[in-house]
Length: 494
Image (cartoon, rainbow, N blue to C red; front, side, top):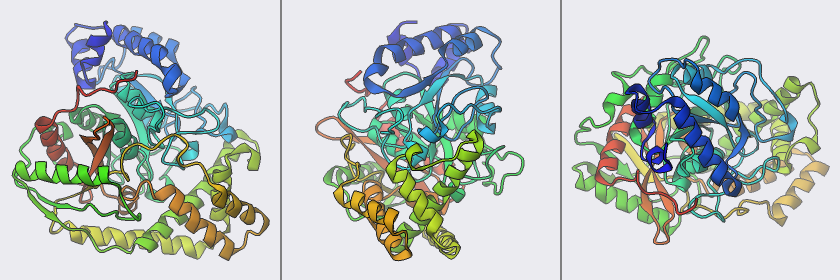
């Protein structure tokens, strides 16, 4: 298959070629592998390859699922595949090979997808960029001096560069939506309880994290949802079942939708002019499409929510390091993880249990606030991130943060920990002021690639809906895609 033909199709289009006999899965897999080998030396998006196994699977009898023969990539975090390395971007798990598939991976296989390998991710998904010490930085195809976002930045870069039409991502604070914004893709985070997390996890980051994909088209995202959603045995909570297949929402008339728009940051201090322009442009387009668009935002306690998010993440990270030790049979010390990871886990270990309860109650209160907000507004539109993609290295710890971490090592006392929590929260959350809220409230939210800067860099617009209503996002996102197509907009490199 010629590269131009491979790139001309989304996942559904490639699956149709296979189903119609116009292409064989081996042709698609070979085209994907060729593209990775040609370009990944510059991008570093794929960190674990399984090319020969993928070729063998494509040549054999694949399951007759809706995405049969389509090349696919898994993130190097969260979705275990039997017999394949997954190290979460950390030296503490280097060489770890699970014995069984995660339920989501089993569903990907049943859909007929062919997994080519794993994409780069920040260590344990902690940072909103993809620059792990273990595997090195992934570069943004739109400009290789820039970050592709994180933590699913390898997946974002891979899809934007045309390695595969879709790649898996996990989202604990924006990790699907952030790289979607930075890489010019559609990235939907489903509602809490929509996607399976078992059998080895009941939940991740205490319900903050959800799994799905980054895609080049809205219909692909819907198709992947149809192929994979639904609870697995023992799920602690279940999202409301859809009224019809998600694919049927793509192209369906959304009606006259009540949309709230805000150009103010929800949890951060500011957003830049590119992000403001993106939101205003989206508001104008939505108004032109006949929707009721107003400026409005919910009344939220920003400081309480930032503190709650950091408390949940640091406590969860401490547990993740314990889990890494249990899985490998090796103790995890300061030299086995990155400095920021170790200090964040230390903060999680030192915080009182009562702080965690308070944090969870804060997130649940925010969910009630958002539910009341959506009584009057069907969708809520903001910028996805603070603005255009950041330079690689922009989130490296400065002298002040490093000094604060040294203090924690010497004096791990609660007042000192609180100071460092506040400092790290600013470092990691300022670039992503709008995504973590919806992880905490459980709502679905998507980054839609509607805006590019004058210099040609993508800036995503975030669309959030009430809990369980991915359908509303898909209907309006598909309408936006039809009004302002982005599929053929490709990065100059590679």
